Image (cartoon, rainbow, N blue to C red; front, side, top):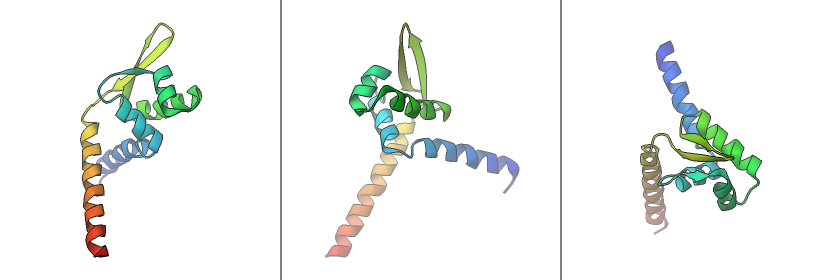
Length: 106
């Protein structure tokens, strides 16, 4: 593997790793179709603001979300909505796995 390829795979892994937590997947789902402020996301997650902010920072550092400060509030939106295609693919894998398990159980 060349150094350029290695860097590309490392960058991909960073994005995938950022999505590797249930709360972060939930946050991406929540802002998939409309931006939300941290206060709204905190209520939806049911965690304290600092925890939600840390999750959002990881998503932001990975390039998945972007933020915009408006007055005292910070709003988040997807930077690249195509990330939802990954979610669709993951759901396809889960359905195929469930189908295979059901067939094996018969």
